[in-house]
Image 1 (cartoon, rainbow, N blue to C red):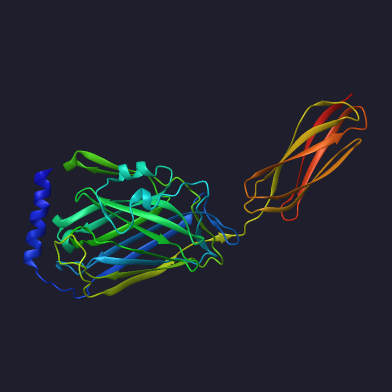
Image 2: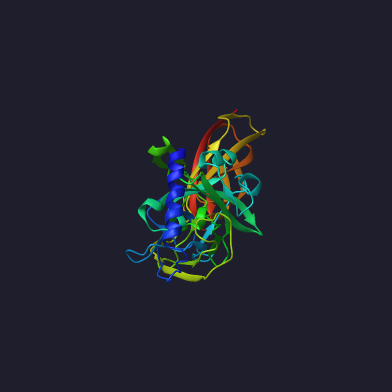
Length: 383
C-alpha cells in the first residue's frame, strides 16, 4: 500500500515539473446526458405526478494529446420546473446532513461503506466519477470515485440532497449539497479535490441500482446500494414535449498543481451542454376498483352492528368525492369517504340496524365524482 501511494506521489511530482504554470486554452467541452424515465410502467402521465428514475451523466473532454483538464468548480444543472419534475423527500425518511458527514467543503478520508453506516436509512441514490490527478489527462493519473446521494430534507421548504464522493485510490472524499429550486435549477459547488484534480466524468443516479467496483490492488470491492426511496423523484410529461435540461460548469484551477490546500482563484470559464430527455404522457384517471364489506355474518334485528367497508382506487390519479351507500331489505346507510389516492384503499366504519329478520343481502356501493362506481355485497342472517 505504501509503495502504491508513493508511486502516485511520484507521478504527481513528475507531472507538476513537466508542465509548470501551464494555462488552460479553454479547450474543455462538456458532453452531458440526462434521462428521466417512468419508475413503474411504460409511460408518464401528462396531468399527474408519478415516480421516476433520474440520471445525469457528464464527461469533460479536451482534444487528443492535450495534457491537462481544468478542475470543475461549480456544477449547475437545470431541469424542468417543479410543475413537471420535483424531489419528494418523505417526512418519515431520516436526514443525513452536516453532523453526520461533516460541514462542506471538507476533505474526508472516510470510505463509502463507513459513511453509509452513519446514515443507513437516508440513502436516495448513488453514482460514479473519474478524476484526473493534478488535472492530468494521462491514463496513469486517472482515478475512480464512488458517490453516495443522501436525503437532505428541506431547505426553506425546498428539497435538498447531500452528496458524498470518495476515491479509494487517493484516500480522500468530499461532501457537497444542492437544493432543487422551483425553476428546476440544481447547483452544487465542487470542493478542492486532492492536488486540485479535475473531474473527468460525473454520474448521478436516483434511486439508482446496486453498484459493485472491484479494486484488486487494495484486495477489496466497494459496494454502493441503490437508493431506498423509489418515489423520491416525481415527474409528469405534459404535451409529450420531453424534459428540457441544461448542464453548465464553471471551470478553473484554485491552487498550484500538487498542493492540497485551496489557493487563489485563477482564470475561470464556463462550458455547457443542453438537450431534451424524451417522454410520453397519457391522461391519468381515477377508478373505484373494489369494494369489500367486512363484518359479522349474523346480527340481531334492531341492534347496532358495525361493518367496515374497504374502497380501493385502482386508477392512476386521486379519486375525489367518494360516497358510500349500504342498502338491502330494511337497510339504508350513507357515509362520506372523501378522497382516495391512486392505488390506495380507504376503510370506512358504518353502523347498521337491521329492521327485518331472515337472510339479507346487503350491498355497499361506492361512487366517485371522477372515478366511477363499484359495489360489494355481504349476506347477513338476521335473527
